[in-house]
Length: 381
Ligand SMILES: C[S@@+](CC[C@H](N)C(=O)[O-])C[C@H]1O[C@@H](n2cnc3c(N)ncnc32)[C@H](O)[C@@H]1O
Ligand code: SF4
Image 1 (tube, rainbow, N blue to C red):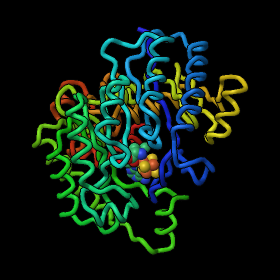
Image 2: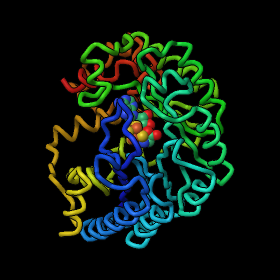
Image 3: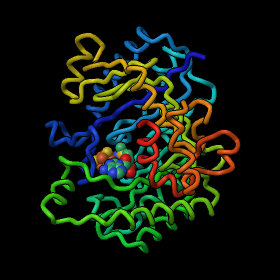
């Protein structure tokens, strides 16, 4: 089947978190009002133009998943987000069991808002929880009260979201092992079906990056961060969440199908400012700034900044890099003798799962997940 997943980027946040380098802008940076209702209408109108453009150049028929990310998609009016879903559904065939996700900042939702999102067609929601510990949230420069996550996830279930996820971050400066344990236990007490846990990346160009560079913030050592990953994996697994991708765990049947399509190298269209697309080995990405995006879409419907066609070697590297992250791993028979060369050593050292190897698959063990990048480098040498 000729499918196309949609990613929809909403490039607005009320304020910027100190660690975040996503393509997002605050009202102050854009000289727009704090009331997003006007921006919501106009930005969504642009997205609809881009979807028409996608229809013109794509041969796909069925859309299996739509994922709204940001930024903070929930700053847009629910009915406007619903217009995007309806437009994709009218220009393409939305699969009957389509997974339609929005990211949400716990501070930006009320029960009524969640009800409206559900009515607009969303069936999956992912909250940026990050931590349950106030001093860790403060170090991350997050403004939300941890109590809001309990309320938001409970309301989400009450209004009919069957799939509810939270994002966690570990490895923040000043976060002790016991702080992380509190975050994990709190997350596991929520009515959720999916958890993502990311090691904090210090991005240059962010407030956190500058603080680390000046020596004002000292990041924890890698060993402690690895211990936190292992603790998360143990606790999630014991609570019935299966590991399915390096940083993702879900209850059976609740893995995020949109992200799996991405890791499998399927075709997807990224609509919105700065969004990236991939169709049959061709990658292209939109201009980043909302003002440039607006201008390009109004001019031609096509907001593309640049494109590249992957060479066979680049496509192969990417395939291995993405597939090794998954619990389904890589079929051994798909690897050339040269690519397989280092693998018996990793198997002997316990970094690959023995039974899977016997069955013809290269799947990372828990220890192997901590050195996934090194294993990929060795395969590609
Ligand atoms: C676009 S944000 C999620 C939605 C919403 N804006 C929020 O923050 O609540 C996606 C996720 O990326 C993760 N993230 C962002 N910057 C990160 C960084 N520097 N290191 C690790 N994870 C990061 C956070 O966990 C965040 O929830
Ligand atoms: S982490 Fe989320 S809320 Fe914070 S600036 Fe980034 S996108 Fe916005």
